[in-house]
Image (cartoon, rainbow, N blue to C red):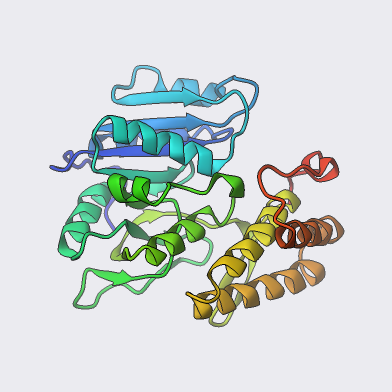
Length: 309
């Protein structure tokens, strides 16, 4: 992989980065600086509550060019924030946005690689995902090498996704009633249902971890992410809704997700810390998913619970 401290010229196809933040860590400033040479603009959608941008984010953007901050007075969820970025890019006539999590480390050739892969794929894909190195297991998401520069996928994660603005807008953007979790998977499945391609680069062009450290690794299913109770709720709820929506069109993907969901329940009940709260949150997510109670979680005990593992 390339040295993250290297610099790269701005890609010939201007790209707008959309970064959703929520209490970003102090290292966010340096990650942002490494990204900026690759994009025309970076739009930060800050979901930090109480209409107050996080202090380290203020420090990060102070004196930086090409950075626009949109502050939300409350946490509106990742899907709504991504739609804000999509709307900004559409009005500014960008062809592509690069969606990023605040903790993702981008390699210096990331954007150029994504654009090159997008141009090599016909028809134009709706999303080009980034292959990434996960430092938790020191593995890449997909195999590197091979004759082709990309692989077709059913879904890719939000972070590192090069999203075609026109095509994404045409299918309705990101699903805001999911609030957080499974937003990326539902978006990709909906894109496929509308006849669009989802691909991923073979070349690893970012460093990214899914969930907290400590997840269990299972054959054929990968690492089951370790998340706090409230995230367990959203994962369970939104997975149930996604499976119910797409099982006829994407039976293999949905079966795999169902197995992951069941094994995740067994894992948290047996191996994880804070088991009771996680299993209870998971059960509430299943119930709300079945009855289609979406949007921000309304269960106060869960909202007020400890967000630790």
